[in-house]
Image 1 (spheres, rainbow, N blue to C red):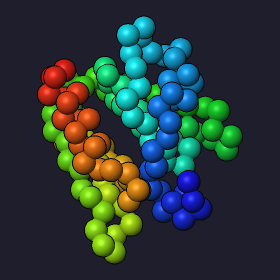
Image 2: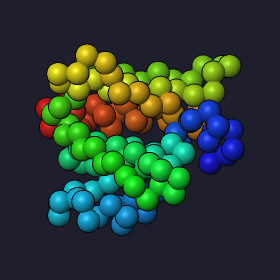
Image 3: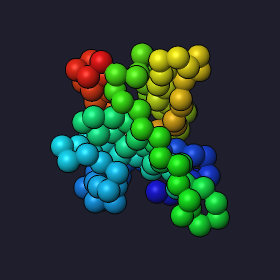
Length: 127
């Protein structure tokens, strides 16, 4: 991830197998990581069963808040692709009972249509 992406907060895609190994202790036996994104220290993980948001806190990042969002809890979502002069795309997810969406900015290098397809598949088949 480049320094500018760190500075401006653009999430970049990371290897799902590395994330699978790191977070295996908090996953159920039939769960598999499909996509993973890193935003500075935080993570957005898409598995076949849920969306996992990892918020690393403190100076060292050893303190973590892990939020689990079952696919059936997502009532709608949107993806906005990066424009010509805009350096990033945006992913928004609305949860049942929450008026405002969760938002993440995604690097231009990420295939936003592929992310949208993953969200569509999991939300529509598990909802």
